[in-house]
Image 1 (cartoon, helix red, strand yellow):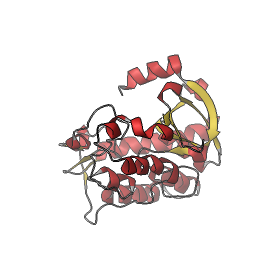
Image 2 (cartoon, one colour; image 1 turned 120 degrees about the vertical axis):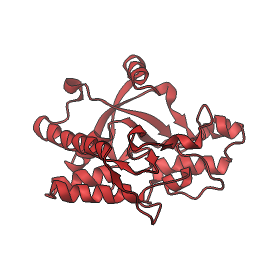
Image 3 (tube, helix red, strand yellow; image 1 turned 90 degrees about the vertical axis):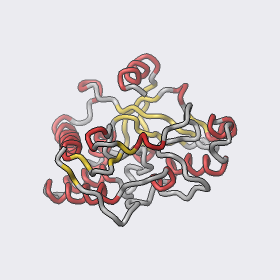
Image 4 (cartoon, helix red, strand yellow; image 1 turned 180 degrees about the vertical axis):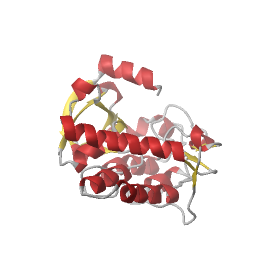
Length: 245
């Protein structure tokens, strides 16, 4: 979704609630506030516990060098019956070109955790990540978390299981939630679009399930990752490299 259009939608139709931070999850399936592996959260925790920038960055880079998934199951750390393109969800509106998540040039990657390049990882992208992570920690340490004052409300998509439990897939705010977790916060205010809530009970009519492009079992496994978490931090034994770009 276009960032400006998303902001407009949330301003008009978003509902603001406060949820347990442990119910928040990254696109890659890494959960927050549970003591599990999460590259953003691990960076923030390391810094709060006294690690130098160099040490925290070294851990973050080590993850990036070996997290190079080629298909969706690999990215989410779950075994699926078929190999689906990266970020092709069973509830997606359209079929995704498998090449879209692998960019020709490192600087073409819109996100350093979800898009990849054969040439390597952009040093410019890394520098941006460090800036966002350090900036979030600094701001919350100095001012507390004041999304109204700084126009930094976290935006999420709400997922609801058949048993009524909810998870919140962060569309924006991963660096802020990582900082909140590292600094000891247990709850986070966020916005979600009620009309975009994804219900497990509706799985049989999810678009790609109806089209038979997803099996029902695989669709359920993908959905469950956002509740159960991704335990995989490496997808390859051949590391990538950092390139000046």
